Image (cartoon, rainbow, N blue to C red; front, side, top):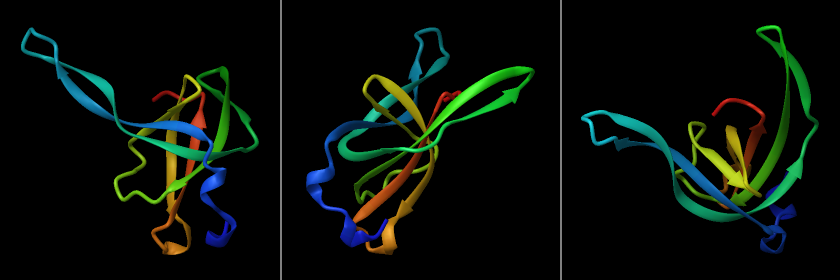
Length: 112
């Protein structure tokens, strides 16, 4: 995608960006939870899915590209949630290094 091909009117899908956080469990330990740090709007493009065999099990995954306005705080350890489904962030690209748009490749169907 080129920077000039994108405009704000295409950002139609609300997406929650989430990051792992530690929460005290009351017994001196902690549990890991996902906390939303931003809710943004995105242009979503479905990409071809695939099936792979992992540990003698057939597993299907779906790849999705989300384009959002530029944010410096998004990284590959985060996840995106939209339409009630969690998606692991696989890559984050600053389109043409212009700090205007981010292309985020997401994968659904994998452990998060």
